[in-house]
Image 1 (cartoon, chains in turn cyan, yellow):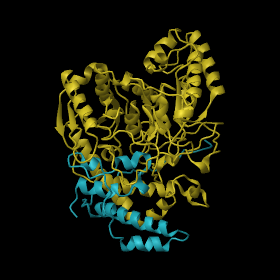
Image 2 (cartoon, chains in turn green, blue):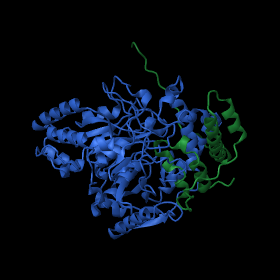
Image 3 (cartoon, chains in turn yellow, purple):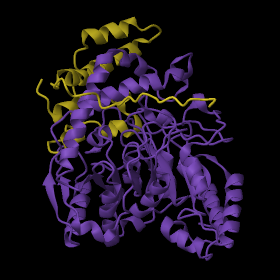
Image 4 (tube, chains in turn blue, orange):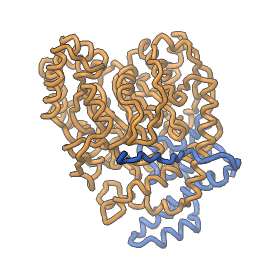
Amino acid sequence: MKISRRVVGRMILGTPALLAGAGLMGTLGQGARADEPQASPAPEPEAEPTPLAKFIAKQEEGLSGAERDKVRKDVTQLEEALKVVRDFPIANDIPPAGGFRPMRSVRKGR
Amino acid sequence: MPTPNLSEETLFLPVTDLAARLHSRRLSPVALTEAYLARIDELDPAYHAWVTVMRDSALAEAKQAEREIARGRIRGPLHGIPYGAKDLVATKGTRTTWGAKPYEQQSFDYDAAVIRKLRGAGAILLGKLAMIEMAGGLGYEKGTASLTGAARNPWDPSRWTCGSSSGSGAAVGTGMLPFAIGSETWGSIVCPSAFCGITGLRPTFGRISRQGAMALSWTLDKLGPMGRTARDCEVVYRVLSGRDPDDPYTTDEPLGPESSSAGAQRLKVGFLRLDFKKSGNPSVEHAFMKALDDLRGAGVAAEETRLPELPFEAATAVILTSEVATAYEDLQRGDKVRQLSSPGAALAFVTAHAVRGSDYVKAERLRTVCVRAMADLFSKYDVILYPTEMHTAFGYDQDFSGVSWSDPAGGAGNLCGLPAVSVPCGFADDGLPAGLGVLAGAYDEAKAVTLARHYQSITSWHTRRPPVTSART
């Protein structure tokens, strides 16, 4: 898949229930289209559920049929975002952004 | 609107003007607090901005401020100024609901860092403001997904405020207080600011301690002010900023000089040209382009630019999905999650099973790439302008599953921890406010505020008052 902001925007727009939080849905994908035509406000056609989506929806206990449908849809859409992240080539020396700092001990009882 | 002794005009004054009157003893902190409390009593039944009004403690704090000011002891620019806090920051002895039914009676025995700092500055806490449940971290489909129902838009109560700082937007917009504390993980300060016609400042990640605030995403959450003017927001932000050992993500980075309205003409300014033809409200685009014209007429020329071609949104989505799933473990246990308003909330935990540990690490590495690219962009520009949202507020009970609405720089800005200001820049053809977004490089809040202050010095959109309605009329 060619990485583009438009592609990313479309896939994330499709996950409103998962990602709507914190104004999230409002933001998803719009950055992706800062310089490209906006996607139609009409709902995008649903993608065929992925094997992992089917598996997760089947494995989880206590869900109704409608909830299993939603899980299949959400996981399928999330997998599109995951594919973008997984496929993005990064050189070996690029570290994660999150830092870890050892904690200095303070001697007590001196 | 009957308000004890004070005009509506006074209640809509910026913090800086209120402080000048309070500190010269032309205005009483007690009278001001009583007036805001009366306005809350009058308006909140129609706007649903508040979870808890702290009447007694607010009046006690106001009396203390009055005594101190009378003795000539001015603690600082917020002394005697009333405010409200989004109900995700802990307040000792007063419930902190996180906007959600499972936490309706939650109480902490300490104050959050921002509450302590504001109390130390002499600000008067009027109460806790409504929010989308759990700051929307598990997803939601309607503005009604809140313990207190949908907050209503100051400019049209049939419309929503945006979220998740919904009560903060409604309360500031209706003049129930002069400033509020909101929070943003992805859009939750700037979107309500744009929809409600107020000004909001999302600080650089790590500028303000989140100790005592509900965590949605440890690497994306920011607290920040929402108020009338960019200068007001800067005043509050500077009081709140600083390293806090209890929030290891806070920074020692110096605050630097304050903004200067006169300095805007020296800034190198870019803008994002968006295509409103297929989606978005064309009259919002008109308001944005008019803002660029107004700035150009005032000596600030902006040149078109673009964001780097990087998957900001995908990386943010993976990071957020992963962090939310562990942040809300408590909800997952037992049946608490089923008490939330949003029927799909419980499924977010299930969907998160698709994310592997290596995906999270990869997304964090991708974040490094994005951070570097945005730092490079801001080596060429001081600020970048964009329409905060491409639409105006929609119906408060509208199901927005599948609806496209926009925060054009939200993915990049939040993933990379960059500051942004949203200021009102006019009205769309539906009579609702539009927002002008000002994005800056990390730790360059002063540049964003400088541009926003300049814009507010040549326009009057931020001074407009909505035709508020009381539920009793």
